[in-house]
Length: 327
Length: 271
Ligand SMILES: Nc1ncnc2c1ncn2[C@@H]1O[C@H](COP(=O)(O)OP(=O)(O)O)[C@@H](O)[C@H]1O
Ligand SMILES: [Mg+2]
Image 1 (cartoon, rainbow over the protein chains, first blue to last red):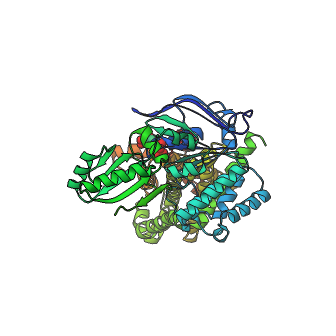
Image 2: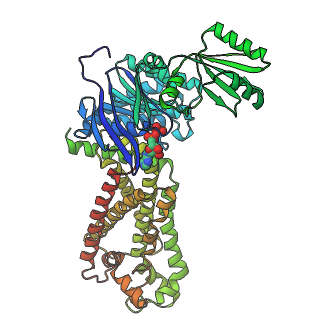
Image 3: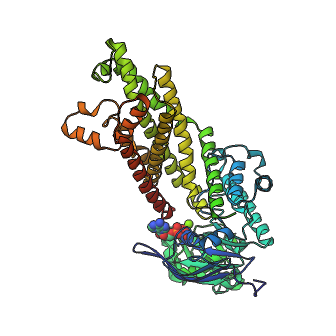
């Protein structure tokens, strides 16, 4: 984004895709500047993988213009393939080969020469902490190791544009951190990254720009800060002991939402200590006992909720959440 | 490098990959090669004595008794067993293609700038190597138990050429079959008829011993001219225009399967 003169790494206009009757992408537009991380954010089934598959030449679009690395997707698919590296949502390693053989296979297919291919393989095995397992069949690797190998294979041949489809799905927190660091260092070396995720915290952490995909359209686009500004404020969540208490509290306060199963109420605001105290005092005087209280400053979860009207996003770590117990 | 050089280099890379698979997990190869050998031994030693006597004057010329019948039957049955060997090998092809297509690695290959045909070519070449090994082993066992082909150098060239052509055609057929199925189990069952076809042809008994409609099918199905030609080349029986028919069948199956397989590969669903 710093270099506005260079053409975008990825440019998409009016992209459409349906599977039979089901419209998955209903005309989406976005641009990814060179050397930046762009994150496509959306719940399960939103069409993230479909978008990656179209952009990486795996499946054809129904309509729209797509340029990747300055090449037209429909006109020069091979030029696009030469410019990109893809780590799909599902493991794309050869389980019958060893880690090293997988990397050499990639080097051979990228035509980078025997000796140089071997050297690059060794380098990547080292960098991805797989050197000890290099000679073991991939079938014996753990999920995290396979994921790392998958990404390492994508990096053979040093593609300038990399697609990562939910790169941290199913990884433990430590492996997730490692993956984030790898993405960080790639971007630092000038690579452009298109990343999909269901995790708002991940987009927040990594992406220069975020686009929110829901029901086939991009409902919002911008930096994490810009998206957060779309939501007026945070909210307070109150937890009650039983349904009767919940009902009484709901009558007294004006909750924005009410969850009868979880026995919680959500109220607007939250950052303001005085109004919070007066609310709790009011409940106390009415003899309504509050079992727990949670404060949310606005984060991307709220953005998502506000934009899409449904909270079907996995309840992932909310870094800005403070828990407090009343009484 | 130009496009052809890339295709050759990518296909060689994919062949290396297939050979590694075979070396690391030899069980499929062992089954695929072992089955025709077991069939050969069963046919010759369990059924051979009786079957040989039933072959008639042309088959059991001058021989008498069960032993004579057996050696006559060995001579008769080897070409059918060679074709069955190919059928067994290509069943392995369908399985390994289906395994590849259901795994993610092929999706990765499609996002790379590599020759489109090379993934399939790798399978085809790998299976050709497997077929050559299997055929050599079956022939070796046949010779060990007394098979004495009368073929001279020219006939041997014909035998090798026809076996290679038939393998090539059936391998491409099974590459396509491995892709139409959406599971490895189905892929292992679909080529089953190929193993049975030599039976309802001239593979284990002459077709003129079969009843009406079956005989008609047996005489006109593609495996029969292939088997008859191999038998003629190996043991000197006459095969008339079966040679041309055999080559024509193989060419037809090869071309149709290749076109089918490439089309399937191009629009194979990535899920
Ligand atoms: N090959 C396909 N055939 C039919 N429907 C598909 C196919 N691929 C994806 N879909 C449907 O398209 C929608 C979007 O899927 P996907 O792109 O995988 O979503 P995401 O990656 O965001 O979870 C889903 O409802 C899915 O069922
Ligand atoms: Mg997905």
